[in-house]
Length: 617
Image (cartoon, rainbow, N blue to C red; front, side):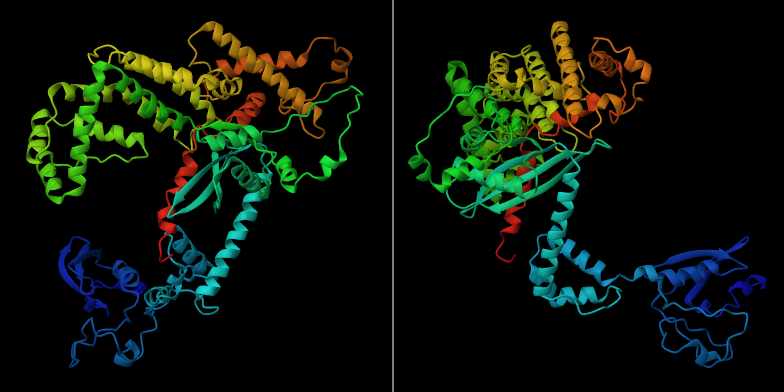
């Protein structure tokens, strides 16, 4: 088409002009419309060049075979839709300077290899939890046949596709184990889930990449759990999952809910501490008792679980569901009003969710539907109450009257507003602690401190629930007593760059935490110096001591000076990054913040359970 540029009326002499209609002429351009496009598609091109129109035909209509227009004296004018005869048969040889258009040729990158196609099919089936028999569906095979791919064989059948998925799963496990081998600190979450009279144990792994300080996660298992949910059975399964992935000696903590069976499992099978006894005392053992021991006892002795941490979100939910409800029902001035308002709200939820007529009445009155709470989530109960508290009294009572329910009084409506206002900080804390990608174990104490402060600030202006903020703070101090006093949790918080010592108000407390951080840095140096072949963190970014330095080495502890200097620089720094400039602080961060504050990740793993247990899957 390059020779058309030398023509004064390039479009008029173009042999493919019959695919377009000339609309208007502007200074150096012309405006045309494409006859092949649906609707009115207008294009602009130069008077001396048809390159824009040629590109449009190649990109938008690649399947249309090019047919040149007949000369004006021909008996028949070719319709753009009639693209059945090649241009060479209609108009003879093409001029030597006129390149031939080939719309059938496709770029090589559009063709998929068979391996790539199988990988895309597997991703589609797995992520959407489809049945494996989908690959044998006639409609699915017809759709796949339209994809340009290099055929090295037929499409996989159900049996071949099942084997392909098993191989991909095995490869994925190998890659996961290799990636974990390079890490020093890993944490896990575990939980049990029962549905359709079947129990499942789920375990997820969480880690921090030491190079970019980004969170990583993986699902280790979601396997069938048979038998009773006893502590020893749970311990055996968790230990087996950890061992199969080579994580037994790398896990800093396992996070579970407050279930008694999980708590007991980690108490009974906690790591054994090696006690060195230098005494030469001789002990005698009855050999008959040794021979009569069962094999089960020997297996129990081999089970060792990592340190246990309770889910902070589940503990906060217990405060809202148990402690707060207990206080509301035990206080005379709140007992009756709390029962009445929750009963009336439950009536609205039942009516609206079970009756289409009631749903239409609610939607006509307030232009939205009511939120119905979930029985297993306190957050949903709070959201449902907050939704009702925002509805004006007039509209709310109008809905209750039409549904033949008891109306909510003004005092009860005021009670709802106060309850939602006091409990609002707790819902925010729950959302923060249920995070996963950017949430670390050190978030717990600063979150609890902020929660208690903001809850006590709500006391001003309360008329009915004046004592509720104090009850919540007291429950937090009681249920999180060990966490608030834990040195590991404190170190996890202070090594988070977004917090450092900001969450501490008392200067004496700041000094103690700072001293604890310095002591932990010294401990890290000593531990790594005792490990052969491993460079202590204080020597990673500094040259080794010279001969004169070694000669003048006195009794002064250089590690103490280095640790204090690094902690001081870290606390003064305002930068946020990878902590590479603070190697000892980074090591403490990776160790104490590998765990997540809650077991929400493994619960999210179970959220797909109803999809995977469908009858057609």
